[in-house]
Length: 185
Picture (cartoon, rainbow, N blue to C red):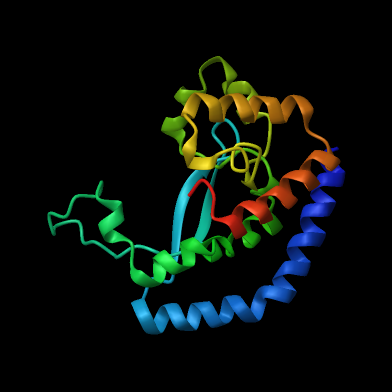
């Protein structure tokens, strides 16, 4: 399944880059005009044991200087108006097509996590690390932020046990429904 999944990822990501490239360029110009630089949010995520990668997104939060005394935990107040709109349409995730083309992500898989989250997977950590993270996945279409972390881990393990090309297509279709219905955000 791995090579077929990679071929699908490359084909679909390349197609989307061609089709959505003008939209992304327009969003970058708009973001530059509205919010200034930086245009991207780049953060380290894991794709295996000791295998970090840099995840790309459009920046949706205010840039906070380290010495301003602003709490980093108050993310809601830091989301810009432009960023809120980008997030509501999930357009902030378009740069992740680059991560797919590079081989860091797949379209479907568990959510990319930071190193400290690996501990939350407990005895299921090997199941998480055995699969490439994805832009969408079973937990994202099964409740997203409305489910507990333990349920999320269980869904990632379930995905690994049952993964197939047909299941991936179903998850992609359900993702479209979730995005249009704005569920679990």
